[in-house]
Amino acid sequence: MLTGGPLDVLTGDYLAELTMLILGRDRLKNPDLGYARTFLRQLEEGLGLAHERGVRIVTNAGGLNPAGLADAVRALAGKVGVPVRVAHVEGDDLMPYGDAVTGEGALTANAYLGGAGITACLRAGADVVVTGRVTDAALVSGPAAWWFDWGPEEYDRLAGAVVAGHVLECGTQATGGNYAFFTAHDVRRPGFPLAEVFEDGSAVVTKHPGTGGIVSPGTVTAQLLYETQGARYLGPDVTARLDTVRLTPDGEDRVRISGTVGEPPPDTLKVGVTRVGGWRNEVVFVLTGLDVEAKAALVREQLADALAGVAGVSWTLARTDRADADTEEEASALLRLVVRDPSAERVGRELTSAAVELALSSYPGFHVTAPPGAAQPYGVFTSVLVPAASVPHTAVLPDGVRVEVPPAGAGAGPRGGAGDLGPPTPPLPGTEAAPRTPPTAVAPAPNTPGPGSETLSGGCGAGFPTGGSGRGAAVAAGSGAGPTTRAPLGLVAGARSGDKGGDANIGVWVETDAAWEWLRATLTVELFRELLPETAPLAVARHELPRLRALNFTVTGILGAGVASGHRFDPQAKALGEWLRARHVDIPTRLLPSAPDGAPSTPEPTPSAPEGIRS
Image (tube, rainbow, N blue to C red):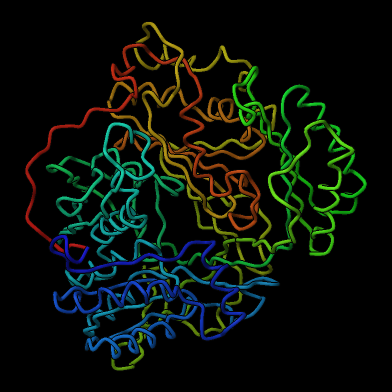
């Protein structure tokens, strides 16, 4: 990024829900840790070049200890002889305020701060800004507000920068990585994306010349839909209306983002809370050849006594076997046993050894994929809300001066002290809280429906057809009728999926107006549940984003207590979208692509606009 072309600000996003748990365990071992140490190794290579070229560096690698990382950056700068001014942002760590805020047994509790603290540090002349838990998009919106001297109530501009930041936050996912139509492009070594942000809040997403991958309306759409939960994208600085975003080609590997409307932010902040949920272990049995179901039943019966008293027991049979297979592996199914318990001893090596010791007295061909192992701790992630005015958002400037950052939004009121972090905050008007068990005295973080939204609660009697004949039945009414072909949804639609705590989201988009008319009419919550039966007992919300020709689905609770709990085969829901694309529906034949991989065509480019900040 530093050598490939011009750049004004280099950002680094190091934090995820699982990362916070890992850093929390690091901090237990050594209170001086709690930050992403990989950042220092990377910084040692590029700090001198960044300083020479006048590139500011903004990163959330501070994790749970931004002050500690800032000190480490100063020490590194001294070691390599680069005179940089280092600042940091703090106040997101709510652990000092106790169980009334965090809930019992919390390992970490961090509020998602906005970009205003970053802005203050850059205005004070910082070359490197280290933060703790800020929103991922704040790494871009904070520098943009500094560059253009935006005020806190310039919501449309801030919203545009937030959308650009959301596109950049997962790196190469905007340049062809994890992209549904990857077969149409060379994505072996995709380059990192950058955003040219303009004074009006619009932006162009691109990449340095000569780097691999692709930037297209499709790759940008995929990332815009990733891990969002509705038309209103709530943030601490602004609420960005995703249903107002327009994407237009702007030249080769250039996509312009414009039209984003911003609204005032909520008067609450989301707080991510992690805790150690207990201990887990697993055994995977290989079942080869005939009688797979009977072999699985035998193992379950033989282990019933050993599993009695274990708090959580889950069996999953994956029928990866094929009839008359040419290789032993293709002839084999996998039976996965996962156990969880507050006691490490109850699900420890003694239990897994009991499973392996069945080898000579169980089904024919008995073997497992790994030797007996000790129990491992697993984590739990929850999110709660606290009043924004009570969180002490602080910018610590290069000269050590501490600046209190006021809460954004007219409704937030004056900032109070830590003692104000007491009363629970009800969900915002017009929002719905996902069913979950909140920590003590704190309100659960809500999902936010927007225009074109629908929500159905779980239950097997949800009213959708149980057979395959109803898939795509709305096509005739919604897209001008005509002949249909039964084919994978992914021949006409892209998808990207991910996790938010225990929930999953799946964004689905198409490339043409005709395909959008069909998708919008056809892919209802009922059909979605039929295509993905695992979602049938869960609450599913559907949101329309017509300007992106996209639907966004949120599935509540499918990931249990979050990625660190290992609740599911795909614990971060990364492949839910690809499973959906592989399901067969009745598609109007005229919408099907002529290319065998179903890759959409690339629209013709249009001229580019003047240059802005490059981040």
